[in-house]
Image: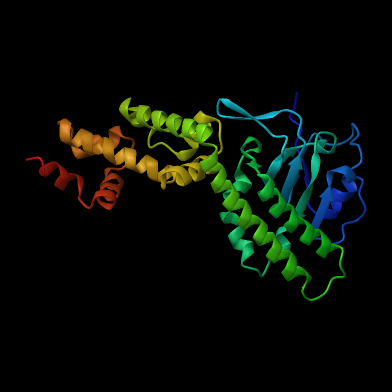
Length: 303
């Protein structure tokens, strides 16, 4: 059986037509209530690839979401963020939960600082199971911003319309980033379990000499092992420890190198290869950057 390619949706107007909705009030931004979406028939494509951002607030979800080895009720609602080019399944969501969606085309942001800044909001690359869960107070804040954007779309367009919408969008994203950081901290059991899992995987990688065969480990390698997205792993570690995933890898790598330098007769080049470096010069550079000493000087300090 051949894989069916996702249907690419280039414009917000095209999405409205697909969902059986009237034309959008603005060609580059739209606010859609799930309850307004008509029942999706069997002719609807199995998956979609949007050319614009999708920010969803959802509540009254049936079922639970799994984080690590723990399940959490999702009935109180939360948020999911989708970037352009990501594949999502057919939106039969209106039958599954209440909520609403904000669709923003990248062209809306042209000429504004947010056009480049939006790429720094890593939660657009988080997986669905890494959704943002909101407290009642946070929910009130988020929904009030959505309301301002929706009200603005229903107001006659003037010279300030786009400025107001984009400023509210940036406010929404900044609050979401704040609330995600809170989530990393408050869901201690889940995230500390993930932290312990990451540390074990990291230790095993270097202690078992995996680097000699597979090279330097990537953040994506550990994220895949833990069944979470790379950005979520890195942001979680940053919130809990002050170091992102790449910094954790480098710290473990340097500690392993120090141990080998101090306790074995291996040459510096042999140690570099063993922990995963293809070129010893790259190891020398990283070691000196992290320790203030070259590997050779560190070795000589034991003599």
